[in-house]
Image (tube, rainbow, N blue to C red; front, side, top):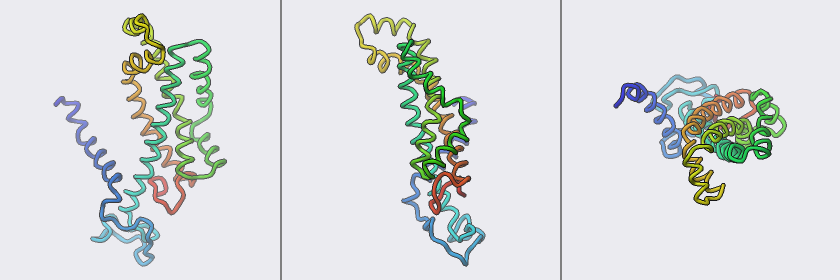
Length: 224
């Protein structure tokens, strides 16, 4: 194992443990995250409540794990949608250029003119808070990033020999983009996916903290 990988291993294990614990929350013997115990408000950790209770007497550990399910689900869903749409637009714009570039990549660049948080606040205020609204807002916000990364990589890949060979063999443009170009530009897209996932999680938490995300009493990391 390389030294760099060895240094990343502890933090990677912690991250995987958190994600798996949130995913397995329905299977774990946890308290009801919505059940209130007024007599136990702000109680210290105990055998029944490992991380104590909040200001309404709800179990903090249960709310952390169930809230993580909501926050991670919104972030993963929004990032995946943005990745699929943005990569498709970047592929078409970078491969065909011309009018296709204007309709795809340059059109989504309009979203970059607006500050992400302000645009998210506007849309959530108009459509109302909720997980579905958050997924829509975050998807729209992150589509341009995927489109631009894919567009730049496709501009380089489309002129390489293996792409020209695929065209010479009579492959249709859709097949060339899906089977030849996309696999060779997947590396930067995966990096962009990981960065976008973290940004989506932070933005979702921020909007929930401001009361424009997940609706109480449902738990969420931002609400907590």
